[in-house]
Image (cartoon, rainbow, N blue to C red):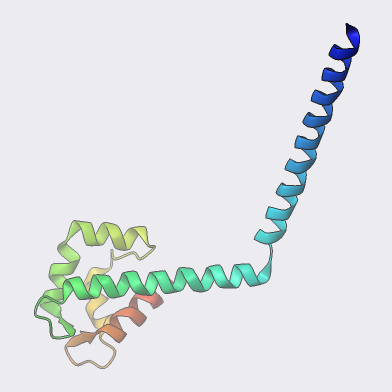
Length: 127
């Protein structure tokens, strides 16, 4: 009678102890992976690539005349769009200083902003 109960108890305790040991092993493996320099570099590069892609998408949506350039009028329309400003804030770009933003992005003082100027300007804003 008691042999079956005792065997079941021992089997249950061994199973529980193995679960705890497996959890400790998995936790230490995950923390070691998170501290890995290569992993950190790759994740940083992936984040930067995603950010550049997002900024390019904002540029393409703002270029209403399809010229590949944004003029000051298109930029003002862009900055008045609540959805765009919320999106830029979400990716860490503060546009509260919007008046000087076009001049900041227009590196060559041409009166228009190319996609390269747009992306590098916003990356500088993000830091």
